[in-house]
Image (cartoon, rainbow, N blue to C red):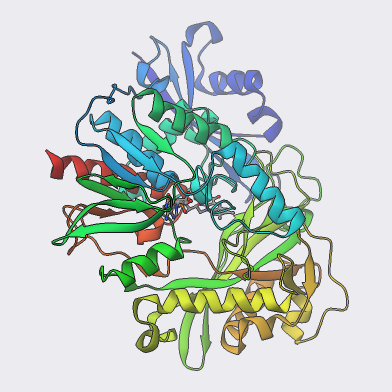
Amino acid sequence: MNKEDLEIFLAPEVAFDEFERYEAILRQAGIPPGKADYVHIQRRSIDARGRQPLIRLRASIYTKGTPKELLGPWFVYPNVNNQKRPVLIIGAGPAGLFAALRCIELGLKPIVLERGFDVRARRRDLAAINKEQTVNPDSNYCFGEGGAGTYSDGKLYTRATKRGDVGRVLRRLVQHGATPDILVDAHPHIGTNKLPAVVQALREAIIEAGGEVRFDTRVTDLIIEQNRLRGVVTAAGETVEADATILATGHSARDIYELLDRRGVLIEAKPFAMGVRVEHPQALIDQAQYRRTERGLLPAASYSLVHQTEVQGRQRGVFSFCMCPGGFIVPAATAPGEVVVNGMSPSRRDSRFANSGIVAAVELEDLDVRQHGALAGLRFQQALEQRACLAAGGTQQAPAQLLGDFLKNKVSSQLLETSYQPGLVSVRMDEVLGPVLAERLRQGFRDFGRKIPGYATNAAQIVGVESRTSAPVRIPRDRETLQHPVVAGLFPCGEGAGYAGGIVSAAMDGERCAEAVLAVLS
Ligand code: FAD
């Protein structure tokens, strides 16, 4: 099999046209079209350094046959219906679903218990949050099939490349319906309009192979005997027993943290980050990044910003988080009486708005660990979310302020148009955030305004609060066996346990936990 690798820079019009791209690549390689069997794009990124932004491609041309591993299918699932010792998986987010599929590959039968509904029924509850301002504590932007990742941007970029096989997660997503572009793009994403179908296909694969997925099944208690987890109790009073339980309930399952604390299962407070979401016209970000008003075929531009701040002698990073170009701000609260914002975007990223979390690190010394113990971070988050809700009138409307006004300490007489459907209420955001967090964010925004022209002005508004960036609690586990150090049979997993931050890293952790379960059960 002959293969030639090359790197090529193409205008967007050529790069995104399949035929023209193919011809340009072969031309650069000096290979006549009839001689190539397959042109494989390995990587696609944007080079915006020059006057004209270009698309940079790394490609391989195969002239003697096409390697099978490039085309898939990559995964085969044996039938595990008759397996005697099922593995219990709590939560059907990326961690839980990928743990289930890996279990199946390893010959184990997964039983997934999920408090929320399937992706289709879940939509009704999302509409109720946006239109009627009511939050169902079991079905919302964080809870339900696919977890917090389903109605998101579906960004699949991760820095945690050492924690597992990123390529395997991406290939699994492609096998179950995600666009193959995610195997190529430097910053891959799926989009909220495409994610539900992928999530549903993952679930169907689990069931087809003999696994189980039970919706509307909230775990409310743990059966622990002599430091061993024997099973769980559900809200309906049912007991489900297993020798191994993967706990993948995400960072918003506060009742699970409270349950562990009440049951005396060791958990620890952990650092996280909190702040606001900032919304700009997408055109302003495009102009700054591409230096042209019309972006044409180029994707909606994004940014990544970070600044070190110092307030009251304590240094803390302020950084952009989960930037959503061409996206929407969404209400991500999981209970009435709190306001939490996050962001999502459709696959085409074609809304007129760019939004991003801008958050400051919260360290253990910022928390009242003496009073609240392991739940200190959780209480801190909760208090901020409740203040945000109260400040904006007690519904899912969110407190907001123009960014220029926030920097000048001035109430905004009028807010801008927004993508946040429940609506915004003009408030002084420093009163919601408290003086220290507000000052950190101000320092960060001033710096970002120096980096991106027009960024820190009244062309933008900040919306509160971005508080669910990562888990405020860690559920410890043994490095080797991945079991809880005190309670055997309990495998803390994914973002909620403190071992992932994002869809791909959660999925990888799910796979790791499945492998760890096999090692312990066999
Ligand atoms: P989760 O996805 O939180 O899943 C946990 C599951 O457990 C939920 O389905 C929940 O209902 C269930 N559960 C909780 N308690 C119980 C219980 N007691 N009994 C039974 N089930 C229970 N990450 C990215 O990488 N890219 C993005 O673009 C991105 N955008 C996001 C946008 C939004 C709006 C949100 C909210 C998050 C976004 N994230 C994104 C973060 C990402 O979704 C999470 O990092 C990821 O989903 C974590 O996976 P997980 O499986 O560990 O937990």
